[in-house]
Amino acid sequence: MALNIKPIGDRVVVEPAPAEEKTASGLYIPDTAKEKPSQGTVVAVGTGKPDEPLTVKVGDKVLYGKYAGTEITYEGKQYLIMRESDIYAII
Image 1 (cartoon, one colour):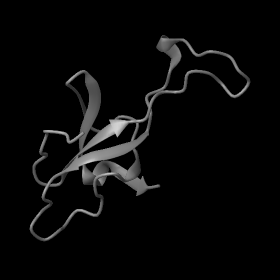
Image 2: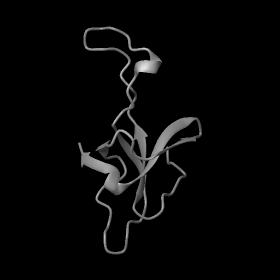
Image 3: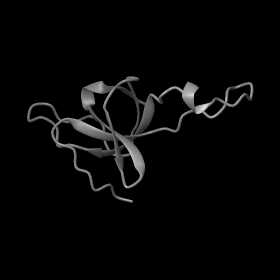
């Protein structure tokens, strides 16, 4: 499915990975205690800056800061719009 959001400049749209539902020992984590995911998949990229092309592309799995980006809801799904500089690594 193609995403109909086109970020501008050096911004990218990331679909966050789902939060952990239970611990390694099998205990379920309540919604109020779940941590925000800090990794996700790039679903749309902007054009970059004239002197700095983007290094991430659609489909890349990335690590980003815990408070990076702006949360949006589009067609019932949660996404983050962030600058490429908010992304720490491609995994």
